[in-house]
Image 1 (tube, one colour):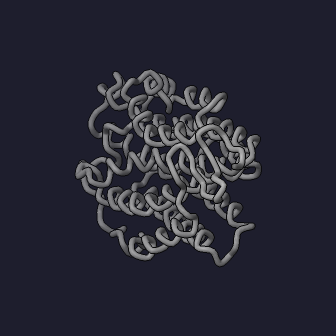
Image 2 (cartoon, one colour):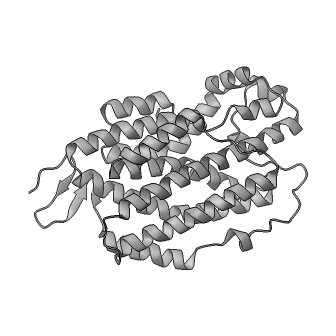
Image 3 (cartoon, helix red, strand yellow):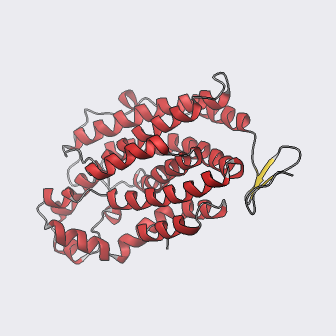
Length: 315
């Protein structure tokens, strides 16, 4: 039997097992995902009515998911100002989503560079890259349709991501992929059925939820495999890089410029968000399914776990 980390084994027959059980064959997983992609993929340019007028009095994001919700400052804001903040935060999240997806596409290309080009695993990765291209264009179009500006991440975080894309381990790439996908996915699952929200936003989040479910499955299966087979140094580096990515993500989740753009005192707004128990619960609820998974497969250990706690995403 090959040596492997605690609760993770490679059997003498070559079958991979971790704390969650046997890992499925990589090619079989990819074939199922390719079949799902063939049946449930969308072209946002034709699927959504981009010319329909925005609906008066509707939100751009569920109010409970807006960063200031429930704070003293929120209670002083008019309904119109609250809804305008939701418009800017939706644009901020869409901007963040595009940034993450551009990173993800590059990481996926790196992952398949040395893989057999005719394998289902590579074909699905290319399918996912095509999905992410459409998603990025869709998010950009949603920002324009809502009339809010784009909200790029800080120059520091932009530069840190450039380093991440260069030095990331393969398991680190998939761990960061899940970080960028699963919290937003949790929020979008609350958004697309919410009739208080603009129809165009609901349509965008519906498409994203359906297609991202495949991306999450692909990333989870591959991360499990990597955490069994990667050398110890790579697993340790993955734990730290994933924790640092969580810290950056939590800071970048909402661009503070949104508060200035709706006429609020930026410092006061940021302080109240940081002090908000409701906001902390929202972020931890959004991350809980992911952190439970990462904990079970051995990612949340040591310094990496401490970084996750400092991010506020891990209770």
